[in-house]
Amino acid sequence: PHLLEPFSVHIDFESGLLSPDPVVLVRRLSSLAGYFLQNADTDSEVYSVHEIRVPAERDHLLSSTTIVLPGKVGDEYYMTKGHFHANRDRSEIYLTLSGEGLLVMALENGTTVTKEMRPGVVNYVPGHWAHRSVNTGSEPLVFYAVYIGDAGYDYATIAERGFPVVVVDRDGGPSVVPNPRY
Ligand code: PAN
Ligand code: ZN
View 1 (cartoon, rainbow, N blue to C red):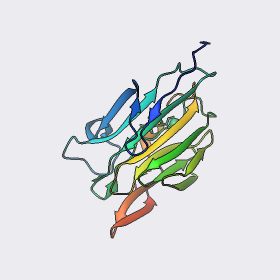
View 2: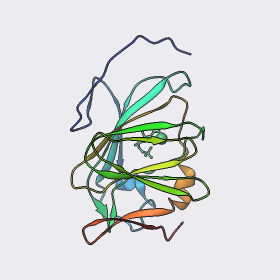
View 3: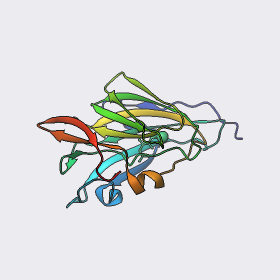
């Protein structure tokens, strides 16, 4: 365990940008190959994660902002990869800061729950629920997430079969439909 000095970070709620000094991870369409039903023909940025640096250990709380850009691949809205936590029972809190979207959560047995994301809404993601954020709006979807330091990421299960549902644009609005590949 590390004894840390207390510190503070500023989040701009509109943009989701942090100061000072976040660790930034950018996901482009090329790093999301196979996640959307259709293939993309550009390599546009889809989302970025801005993480406050603390050790990834059980006695710390990791936190980050995620900025999911507006856009679609075919009729499927831009979204995060989605994951289970490597330590499956680790839970997480999402607070949406700007934009609008849907948080899709699923158990390994296929049970699925979808919740709205909009500014001021806190979404609780209990352990064992895989989670993916989908931007259904025309502005960036920005949220702040707090999670137990040793939660870790299991991307493989989602990379293989996806979520039980996909979120698509039907007549100009979001529709949650069964995933034909699940
Ligand atoms: C979030 C996510 C972030 C990006 O911080 O990691 O929104 O999504 P993916 O990790 O699925 O690409 C979180 O849930 N952390 O546990
Ligand atoms: Zn998570």
